Amino acid sequence: MQQYHLSEQALSLWLNYVEHQVGFILPKSQNNWVKGIIERHMRRNALDSTALLQTIVQNTTIYHQLIDDILIPRTQFFRHLPTFAFAEAVANAWHLQPQNQQRSFTAWSVGCSTGQEAVTIALCLENALDGMQVYQVFGSDFHQQSLIDATLGNYDNAEKPFIPAVYHHYLKDVGRDKFSLIPTKKSQWQFFSKNLVDAQQPMPLEAGQCQLIVCNNVLIDDFWQFE
Image 1 (cartoon, rainbow, N blue to C red):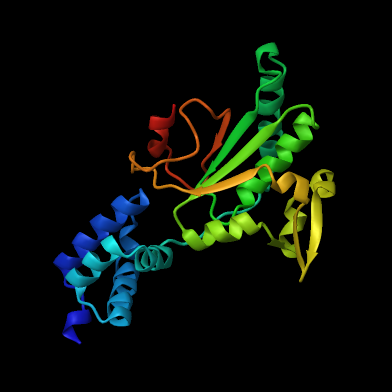
Image 2 (spheres, helix red, strand yellow):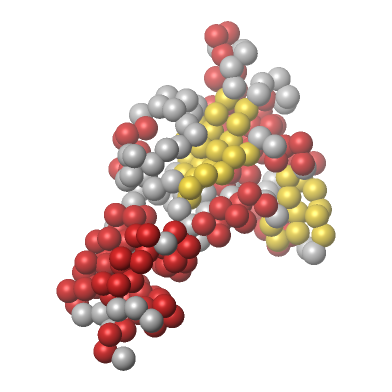
């Protein structure tokens, strides 16, 4: 069983690799937790440390299984009225400029996890623009299961009270004690996988395209490339 145990040196190499892949520095307090996940994947695939690393470079399924286990999905709907008001004010100010009348307003939720932040942005834009302006809300994350859940866009009714009542007419009960945005609004979502430190990885957004970028779950230092 020794082959399924990470040495301190091997763990250090793995941490560097994982941090490069996900685009942020892992807290030292999580080192043992990450070590346990990697060793579990070594046992599951009957591979030692070197062989597992070689495998995930070539096998995207095993790669994303490992990364998804390490990443912790974390997001929520906006919970403070000033945050809603700020997002709407940005959209209104942009819409009032004559040169923008026929342009689409674009917003991006970075580190969107399961999509609550992106949904909140969509609610704000719908309420602010009132059908007078086309808008598109993008969400990105590197946790693949979270992106699947975000695209589905169904949330527990227990989360609905955090959304002010003024926005509830944009929501629809979908059964099983869940709700979602009404279908015509969901068509203005788009979610994609993105590692912010990988400049070679393609993305559906161009530099300067976004009027609003929300990044509650990502270190702001990662964003200077998008200015």
